[in-house]
Each structure stands twice: as C-alpha cells, then as structure tokens.
Length: 396
Image 1 (cartoon, rainbow, N blue to C red):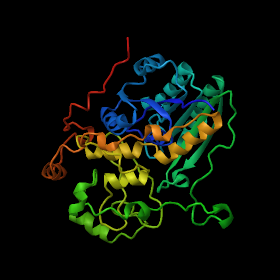
Image 2: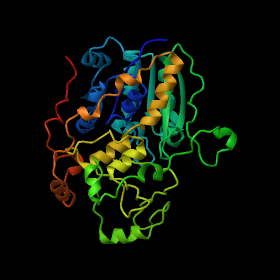
Image 3: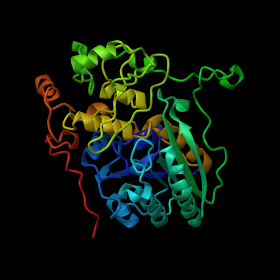
C-alpha cells in the first residue's frame, strides 16, 4: 500500500468533491475557484478539516502556480468539475463558443502540467453529445495522448445513497494502471430491483427519508437550523401550490413537487440572471429551503453557508456541487485501484471549532427576505471581510 494521496480540487465551488473525498480519508491540499463566495463557503466548511480554498482564475494559472501556492512538489490525484453551463441541456448549449466551455480543456492542461497519478473529471452527460460528440472525443484523445488510461460513465446519484435522480458524467484517468470495473458498484437500489441483486443492500433514499425530521421553515424551531429559511410566495402561487399533488408539475408555474417516497428531481444551479425553479416540498406549500436542498444533494448538516452569502448564491452552490456521497464512492474506488491508503479519522475535524456562521439577527434576515435587492444574486449586498481574505493572484 502507498500512503495517503495528496489531492487538488479544481473549479471546486463550495466543495462537494472535497467533502466526499475528505469523508473517506483523502488529503485535500487545496481547492481553487474564481468565485469568492464559493470559496468563503469552502473555507468555512473545510479549513477545520485541514483543507484550504483559494480564489484564482484557473484559465490564467499554471500547474506550477498551484504547487507553489500549496507548497507541494507533486499531486497524486487531481479532481474537478469545470463549469457545465456551456454543455448543459438546460443552458444555451454553445459548447466551446461559450468561454466557460474552454475551461474543460484547462483541466486537461493542468493534468499535462502536474502529471498526477490519477484524475477524476465531472460534468453534465450532455458533454458527450454537444457538437455531435466532437468536444468529448477531443477531450478523450488529449488525455490518451498524455498516456492516461481512461474510463467514463454517467452515474446516477441515487445509486450511491443520494436522495436525488441526478445524472452526471464522470471520467477517471490513471497513469500505468489499467482501469477495471468502472463505474463503482451501486450501493443503493431502485425498489423495482430484483431481490437477487439487492442482496440485503438498501433501497434508494427518498425525500421523506432525509427531510421528514426538519420542522417547517415558519416554525420557531427552524430558526435554530442553519440555512433553513422561508421564501416569500405570492398568494396566487400559494393557491396553485396547495392544489399541486406530490410528484406532479404545475402547468401554470412549472414547479415540480417532490414525492415523499421517491428521490428528488435534479437540483439545478442557474447562472447570471437565470434562477431555476426549485422543487416544492411534498408536505408544505413552498419551495424547499437551502438546508433541505443540501440534504437532497447529500451534504450533512455540518456543512453550513455563512449568512453573508446571499441565499440565491447558497442555492446555486448546492446545485453546482458534486454530491459528496458520489465523490466518496469514487475516492474509495481510485484508492482501491491504485493501492492508496485512506485515513478517514485524520480529516474529521471539529465543526464546533468554527466561528458562528450567523452574523445577522432574525429581524435582519426577515427584512432581507421581504426586500427585492437589485444585484443580490451577485452578492452585491453582502459585507464580510472574510469573503475576500482568500483571494490570491498567481505567483510571479
């Protein structure tokens, strides 16, 4: 066995990938993203576990820059999910014509410059078909030209214990070692799965499994639960939602209502001025809270967004994140494949050691919810010196 591998997380967002890998005992040395508020969330939730996030434009940085920032000589595992809006079926699907689409090849560039023993790349399934599959084939060809063995598949998050029907493409690459038995075996199964295949393994986790114990957002008990705040609805919307059955879509508002006995619909992030419609709670006539979204994405309640990050940004960070249980499964897979040791106990940390995530009174929060602040989606109303503390420039 080889010692615990060092890992760098590119385009890390709030850190879903890092969370899952830390959970199974991989040493995350750093996460990089150009979104200052995502890195604020990353650091609040990973610093106490030994991982540091940095604000950096990865299109302008080099592999040497990353190693210098982290004071490393090499990296064993490189992971990342370059922005997917250019390839998503719900976006404009401009592919490489969208500047964000070029970032996927920056990931390839970092692989070439850092030469990690292995990498894991995440993106939307539509990456395989955009531009008639030419972008995806070019991606594979570039990795193979770097002498990496490649395996890839679309993974369903529900298969790995996430209460969500979320499909994402994952590509794994290794130097020297051939990749067998990819993707990893499912840990959870659809209720219709044959009894022989189940073999005493658990069924898919449902919305009710992970949300039922949370009080309604309007109850006094909700105030003590981080990121569990209400959203204001119009009277007309409330009337429409009251008549919407679980598992159905509103024809007028296009909301989807969760079904208590099924996994969630795919949570979406949105970008720019686009705000995706969030699912409706199966019991309450309202959209789900950030805390409920996080649970459906596979985050534990120890993962908290500080209240200087606007709620729209919190929702987007959840929707953009790699589901931690899926990341954990892939982390275990790559360690078993390469004979790497894992040290889960080493990266648990103490979440109580963090400063409070709340800096605002309940009255302030309620006032903000009732206000329409132009530019709030970009966090223009947020004030916190901690948000910019992690901003760096590439070393000269």
